[in-house]
Length: 455
Image 1 (tube, one colour):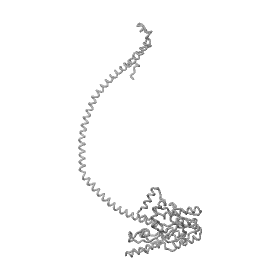
Image 2 (cartoon, helix red, strand yellow):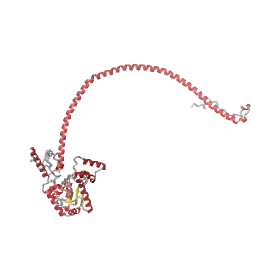
Image 3 (cartoon, helix red, strand yellow):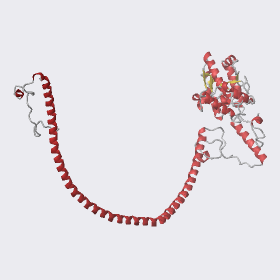
Image 4 (cartoon, one colour):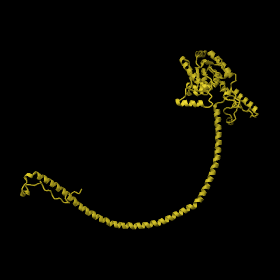
């Protein structure tokens, strides 16, 4: 299998050592005396999984499928359960260990993936389909791309979760698998067929408390009590491999730190806690130590960078200031004579135009006085003409109105004549008061009378 994944022709000088995905946490060794008995645990079947997507193939699908199917069965049969696989239901740290210790049985499956995407084509195809569907691609729709790859490999690995369950003496219900060859079905765990064909037998074994306790004890003895799968053994494997390769390469190794206590806890020298050289510990330490070390290293790096930048930019600013100072001095020397020349020209132009402006002012002042005298007499003459025109206009208006009234009288006179055409008086009686064409003579109009209106 290693040769198929890591060909020797590509890694001629590399030794590949098989290790596990996780080991028995040493921090769980102190929980043995505080674990509740199986009959005291409130949850019959518990599980926490994660849907990592169809791109990782059958192993990823099984992590969701075992939870989904078992939750349906537990709900139908009235079996107490706490089974989830969404991100918001994940548990970490002590909460996770408390959850395992509260279950009579934990679900599980093999970990890892057999989808080796050497050229990235599987990932590209998944992203294309996800874009078309507008979301995650279902496993059944993507099997056409992963099944041909998975058929070439078979890496059934044991999960770190199984070591935790064994350390907390919680029986395990696992899908059929290899589990790195470390545990056997019905000896260390209850085997659940992937098609759930033996679910009745599985439920029957879960109800047998004595059988579950013996199963949990055998799993504990194999995975935890043997000591073969502790982090100490893992470190020993790494040290042995390094020593062997150093001997082969005739390399000198740094001597081990034998004068340092095995466990470094809070209250120790800060220099020890922040040292870039790791000290051996009896068990994995709390993540806060790693976080503290990371922050301390980052702080040192930032201090070094600030010192370097301060030194660099101080020199650079000094250099730029000197350059600017020299350039300003050069420009002052270059343009000082030219500026003085321009100032003199401005003064000369100002003197020339000042005299010319004074001369023009005197000329224009005299001309304005002359024009004022001329136009004053002309304005008086025009006013006389306007007055004369106004008087004549009054008489024209009077004549016009008189004409209008005369025309109106003549029309009335004509109408009267037409009415009396058959009985005209004699010439002598024409002017007599008895016969008048008009009932009353109109008064004469005068421009000064009230009837003469200029409006």
